[in-house]
Amino acid sequence: MRILIDRLWPRGVSKEEAKLDVWLKEIAPSAALRTWFDHEPDRWAEFRRRYRDELKHTPLVHELRDQARNRRITLVYSAKDQSHNDAVVLRNVLLGRSIPLRRT
Image 1 (cartoon, helix red, strand yellow):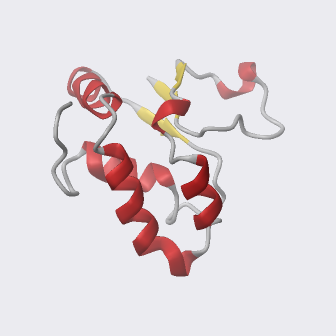
Image 2: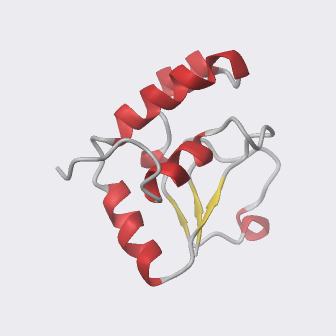
């Protein structure tokens, strides 16, 4: 299952090219957090902390975890930096490699 997790659609990519199953823009970092981070590696630690805090408040995390237990999911993102982006944080949260999340 291919899931786009960006709030904005990637530039220059058609829906046919993307071959997505679902677009979960609601799970992306808030616009304010995304703007603040601006893909600056020196802000990475604080970005991770703030994004994990945002993820605590969305039931979509638990839905994705449930889906991942039953099938392979691929988190699709458009950031050029493969090490410093929201997919890295979300993946770690889904795998339980992050702070525990409360169900709401």
